[in-house]
Length: 238
Length: 226
Image (cartoon, rainbow over all chains, first blue to last red; front, side, top):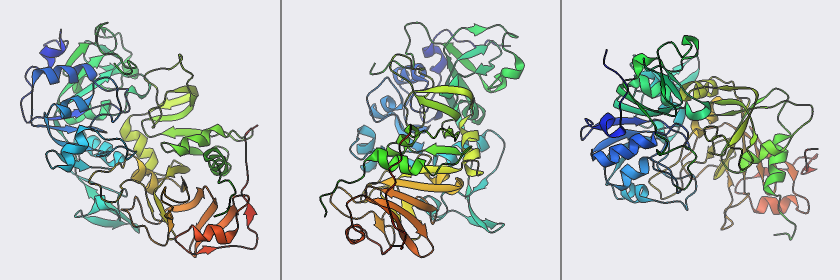
């Protein structure tokens, strides 16, 4: 079996084509695959569709999705935020979106997570109570079950998923630490090819207790260990 | 308007937190609602839940002792409590939609007399920030709102009907504002408690919906933790 361990981030992202759909894990920092994003920015793929909790942060901070958006690499965004929680916060995404130069689909966060989960679970569609009676349900089927209304939502799938995990073995089995987990496990399942950047070195098979595996290795294709001089979580303002 | 001071954010948060019952699972929205966790009731254990996958997290971490992989929904570093559990994002929202959260405390731009509220999109804007609000609004057993009583321009936020796009219809049951505590009933807003130094007429004048003022109207309870 071909090794899943890549020596560099550049090698891990080298074949990503223009127009790809990519899921990015991360919530307010933890789990964000910052080193993979930096490599993808350097690689130059454009016309991307990105699926993520936000189209990057609205504040200053280490590299995230906003770098790809600012560089004009993103055509379409699927996210739970298409504006900051405070109206005074603006950045390039807001200008591009309002000018119609970038498309965006705004999805309630739980629906976003469940659509990704469904995409990686072989589910064709599902009904959720979230959004019934709001703008997000407009144009969608609403159906009543046991006296309650639900809206029909479709799964999300992707060509690639990028995530950050804490620990891995050579089979690709992953463990996350605390809220680094967030979208990682569900995105790894919903993408055809999953890339993981890792806090620590890759352990031999058997080093991770099978009962403690958070993402089984069959969902993980490429792994790169973040080097000591790589981008670390918590490097605020970097 | 009276010269009396409006209620502080912490006073509003304390009042909302006084409603939390022992053993409740509580989700606090970004901003003002996070202040609710500063109110500690010695005889009630509260399990704070965060939609990025935490149940039973603790207070904010002090500077220098942060774990950079442990944040609440507002992106603030928090500390783990003994017995904390971590979930992925799909499971975190599964428990929210399935009714395991006893109360969601959210900020809002507007709340209507029929329990509708709006907190994700401002007028004239193309983008919005829904985050987890729509899921929390339909999934939590109780939805409480904290907000300034009026906008910066003095326009009321308590209305007969929301003008902004709503987050969910008919879910809010309790609102704490800078002027008092309001219960949302089938008859509309009931002014339960009023900020010290204000009259019901003054509160009504700053409100865009008819207020029911009961006989047993009380002064705003100024809870504080020991």
